[in-house]
Amino acid sequence: MARISRETEAIVLDCFEHGESDIILTFLSRDRGRLSAIAKGAKRSKKRFVNKLELFSFLHITYQSSPNQSLNFLSEAEVHTSFINIRKNFELYTTASIIREFLLIAIREEEADDHLFRLCLWALHNIDQHQHPPAVLTLFLTRFYGTIGYRPDFTACNGCNTLVMRNQRYSFDTTTGGLICPSCSDRGKRLVRLSQGTIKILLSAQTQPLERLHRLKISGKILQEALSLLHDYGRQLFQREIISWKLLQKQ
Ligand SMILES: [Zn+2]
Image (tube, rainbow, N blue to C red; front, side, top):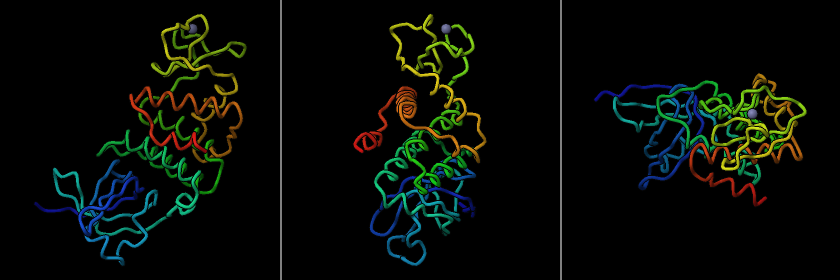
């Protein structure tokens, strides 16, 4: 069957050796969402792919695709940015690995999402520049859930639809992805207590243009609360543990 040559920008999310000379890669691509490709002879031919097929590298790739085949053939890769600091620093690597794990769980083939692609680049860039990795992770996850269709709602109580009031305490219900006021809280649910400060910053994180997202400063108790909520929400949403999160807790 005839192969078609295509090009796209892509971020390396996974790579492993296959046989004696090949490497199989999984990308988040700008044009086609999740994309898998085999780099034939990549382990032997040092020249063509040397130092390019590394985790988190942002590449421009050329590949050959065949109809009805999900594995493509990588023919060329040019590096836009290799995010080299991420691979040299444990804290940066851990944070980027959590983002990578969420992406590998959620992204699908043929589901291109330019916003998600730009969000991912934004996060890797800011982590690479040591911009307080836990805060970058918080901002990334707040937006990420929205891009995959599970935007948490911080504007009103999910039970009675009353808009959020400043003098009220709220919890977050990870099963519905929304806030719960004290009158609606019910003991059986998985609720995470949230302060007003956390609600306010997460709302801003959802609405800021991406170019200004790095200006939101999150630290201290608000950061802890927000990260814990975003972690619990992800576990509930995907019904599984986020394995790389354990590395974060070891720091
Ligand atoms: Zn309520």
